[in-house]
Length: 160
Ligand code: B12
Image 1: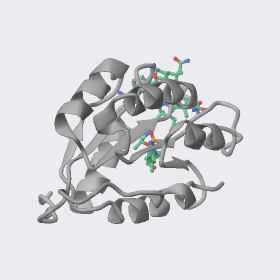
Image 2: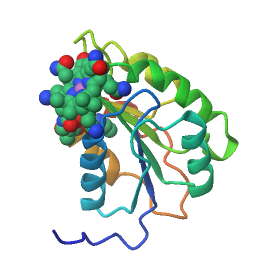
Image 3: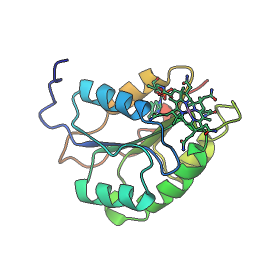
Image 4: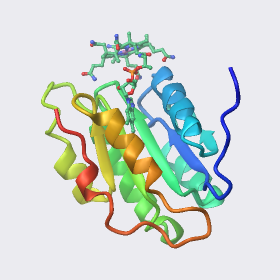
């Protein structure tokens, strides 16, 4: 496997699971995908306590936070996580997205409105064009050192 070329001004992207979720390969997949797009990734792995995610993000000041979850409880966990991230002034405007299998009901659109209202910039739930939409979103994040993206993500949620 070759190391992908990083974009010269690419900001760091943090990839993370949520506290309840021990699934790992979705996070490895996300890391490889984002690196392939040219961004350096810090992958915090699965079962990340909220306070660890917040502290790592406060320290790293990433250009994007990507949360992946598939155990079916992520939709709930993520409401708590985004509240804590948005409660930190330095992270209030950081783009934060989530994707995967967010619930157990099979109704893929159920969690998206609440997650967007709670502060996520985009939701990429499995089905439809989730991965293609996510790739487009990542390409749109601004280079390091520029002001944060504002209001660009609302249209990026995945559809079934
Ligand atoms: C391996 C596995 C496990 C392993 C995980 C080992 C490990 N270290 O990773 C173990 C045995 C521990 C496990 C446990 C559980 N599992 Co499990 N597991 C799986 C399994 C078989 C494969 C998951 C996998 O690795 N896939 C490969 C990766 C690359 O793909 P992925 O995870 O599907 O992620 C893709 C997408 O979701 C998407 N994606 C994910 N995140 C994000 C984020 C963004 C931003 C984007 C754009 C896309 C994206 O991209 C990925 C690539 O397409 C799936 C079933 C299946 N066949 O998919 C069930 C599955 C995920 N597990 C499931 C469940 C219910 C559980 C348990 C609750 C079971 C139990 N009762 O204990 C526990 C939960 C444990 C916990 N605390 O989280 C359910 C979830 C159901 C739901 N969400 O509706 C599944 C779907 C099985 C099923 N059909 O019921 N599991």
